[in-house]
Length: 449
Image 1 (cartoon, rainbow, N blue to C red):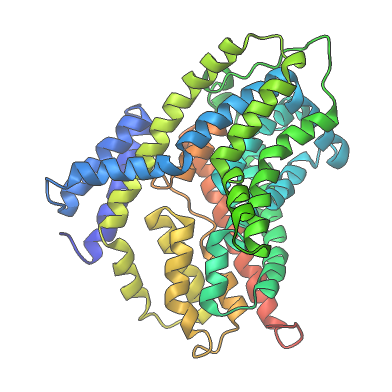
Image 2 (image 1 turned 90 degrees about the horizontal axis):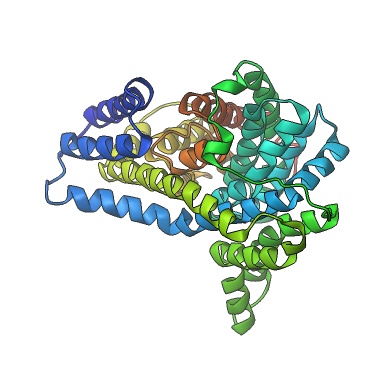
């Protein structure tokens, strides 16, 4: 097996090969990801007999989390679009925030939604708003994808009870209530900077015609019918899966274990919650949909197939890199660095995020190493934890399955995904670190710091 600095070199070269195949040679992302995963495993020195299993396990384990979700999410998006519900919700956002600030409204919505709901699920559920808002306002779809994606990932990385930051608070010994409070204080400005302001900036510099053909990628019928759906019903259906998942989260935190929590845990599972929502939608929205359901199903399945394959292939590539030992090597290397502890925590988490392709893994790994040393290092447990969380926000690369969820559901090309999602998240992470450092300057005056 390859060790030391060569792990980093191979990781960088594998990313370069992936981009070259997709962007220059125009090889389909699914084929490119599987090919690079196999080649990287060979170069890294994995035993030949183990390589197929590592790739297949990485593919399968990724789809355990998002495979059913993607299929149900596309069906749900189809029926909401065909009924006019997405259009009604877009109108409500525009009335509340105005056309010019609609991206900011979507970004803040993302922050709120991703506290109880996992990033992938939330992006799938809300992605229908991106196309509708872009169409109604004339603002680039890139702006809305950046605003939504960054809002979701910042909250997912910084605010408990999302599992990653919840573990960070535990490992650092931080008070959970204060961690949530200061996490929100850091999350909102960083979301507006990396999601809204940067999204507006980059959206004006990317031609909309360069984006993937929306109708080809995710055909959603928006048929006008004689009976018009109400805004209230539209908002209820969008909130239904989110509310079911949130109910599960709240009961786990506040109710004792028992039959009720078991039942709510089943209903609030992201796949079950979305399935229930689809069934409710099919029943409730029937008067508003003129398109045959069979056509909606066919279009949804055609779209879901390639998205599932590419997302799983991203997980396969990520599994090869993760099992190469690059995480352990980076941990050993960075522990010897001499720098301010908050900055070290941020860089530690950021590098693990980029190399391993998982926000949660980066948060758990970094906090498990630095968290117990908070007092010894002379750092506030809350600030140390938030610095770790800030590092896990950005630099999502093709070894992250979330990269492909944003790419496909955001209807972007790969260069646009890098410009909007990857860089936008990185800027949001830096902004969050800036907020943490700002809080540290006033730690003597703020409770719990």
